[in-house]
Image 1: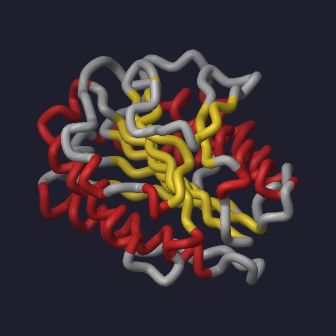
Image 2: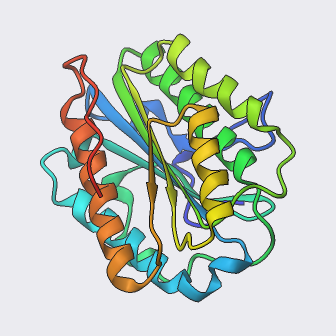
Amino acid sequence: MPILNDITLDEVDLPNSTYGYSATRIEDLGATEYTVATIACDVSGSTSPFTMEMEAAITHIVEACKFSPRADNLLLRLVEFDDSLDEIHGFKLLENCNAGDYAGRLRSGGSTALYDATENAVSATISYGQQLSTNDFSANAILFVITDGGDNASKFPAKRVKEVFEHAVTSEALESVISILIGVNVQDRTVSGQLRAFHRDAGFTQYVELETADAKTLARLAHFVSQSILAQSQLLGTGGVSQSLVF
């Protein structure tokens, strides 16, 4: 269930998905164009040694985006997943995201439903993008899936993820969609191979692999994520797609 949501967010069902999502009501949007950003963060049991560092990274992402000249054109959704998915908050206007709210919000435990979490992240993005488009808003999207291991608990197969990525393109609800799979604390060659295969087979735009998950590395990750969001936002309305940034 949502943790940081409020009554200004509508709850939306996704008929063909395991989970739904929540989002800012269309009538509460004041700009004419938005970049829709999603961060899906693995909180399976193996992530417990660096939970606090990941919370700090999320805080830094929100803080950095708030200082952007595009801050008024950003909507952010944050979910956490292990063998199930919890929406910490739905698509909120950045101005309503309080950086101080993320400390102590991630909880670790369970296995890794990576495919289900990715499917929901993409499906929710498409659904909200269609709402925006129907109401004459211009929109593009960027999403990040952060994990320290391969899937071992999903209800959906990997091919379902590929299907929703393909639908993200064919739906034409969004001007462009950037998707980045991020492997953190990846020190096992088997895990690395699994994540690289998922990146390729699902159709992610980019794969980033980090061998560690210490405070310094995750601070660099926060910078990478925030700069990627801002790069995508700056291209909204141009018809272009942001180039992959180097971590």
